[in-house]
View 1 (cartoon, rainbow, N blue to C red):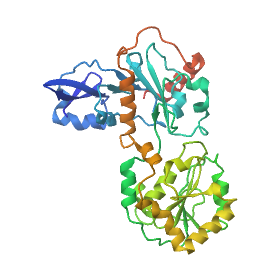
View 2: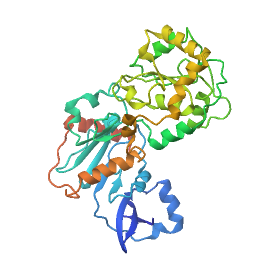
View 3: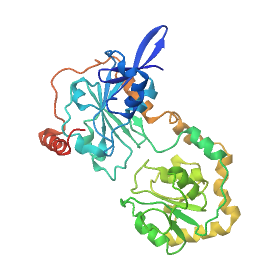
View 4: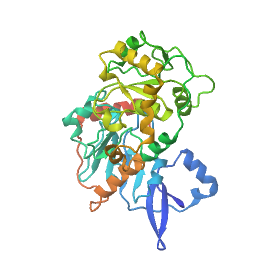
Length: 375
């Protein structure tokens, strides 16, 4: 698909019966993508206006700018920017809730859709559980199944098929259990749980918490982590907090590696995985009781291998239904939702603005920006 720079960035275009349709816009000034495109002559193309609705990413994501290049893949008739100066033009404004300190100076214009998004647990970011705060958002995008746009850690159907087809690697490590844990967030009591469990069974810990092992050879990131987990009979998947639907990669990485997850977290975890594919720590009276069961499984091949039987069976219908649409990127799912919501609405808001978070928040946010300097 050809791309064309505009006065505010890049717009990709697709021919439809001989006519061009604007499908996206990116801010490229100073970005690697713009520098890559300039040598092939795109930097000399004419600037062309666009009438498609503008989507503004108002906040960063944990201090990192949103990767607007991913929006090109959605191929929807929208524009995207992270230039807050264009707030009054934006048909929809997206906020990353954990970066709430960046929101305080946002003005809301009549007809504008505000999106609050986060994959983080409500237990860790209490504003997500505050109706007074959340009422400012017209669209929610979180890990909770009831969100307007569901943003779970649950992988899509393609991932499950690949995982089921992958061979179970040999269990070569002496310790039965692996642990990867570095975050200090401990609202689930996982630190105390792991410490007590280690008194009853061998645990190799590769994270900063309880560290007693290091990655052997070059660390290639997720690939190395999955390979390492696969050499253990069990892997602890201990969530940093316990909340409905908050089932993270701590469950899915061991499944991908061909190892049995030992899970501590969401009470409705059964809705996210096949039956008998993991061990729920909540089913035991305590770490000592759990350790005794893990020792039994490690010494009883038939009982241990029963936890992999799900790989040769179809996924449960309830789980298969949950996976529908998840193979589409989260960016696409959000933009498709906004595209539908914005149909029939003015492409640009009009009228006087308000300060939803109040004047004090406005001043605090502006002071923070002044201290940090321009984005």
